[in-house]
Image (cartoon, rainbow, N blue to C red; front, side, top):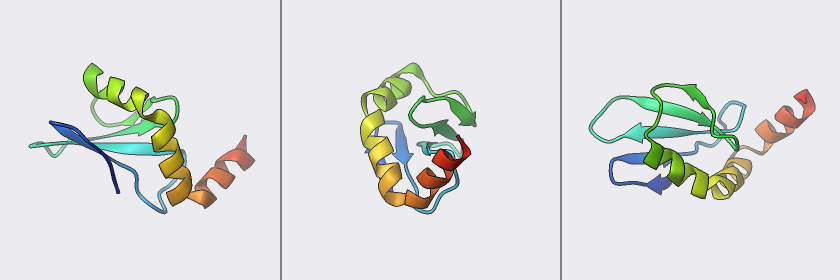
Length: 83
């Protein structure tokens, strides 16, 4: 599900996705994709996002986490059990 539409990127959160909580950044006109952990915004895979993209993620972290929890309720429970 697309969560954020930027001018040169889109941010997605997918249902039934694997832990830890994260979002996918797809860059327009490129095949590159970054996985960024939520809520800390740590890079999990792919190229380092531009600062402007990270600022957008930072401004929307709560909304992205809420969306992750709605789409992946069992993943949140598994993450809490591992802590």
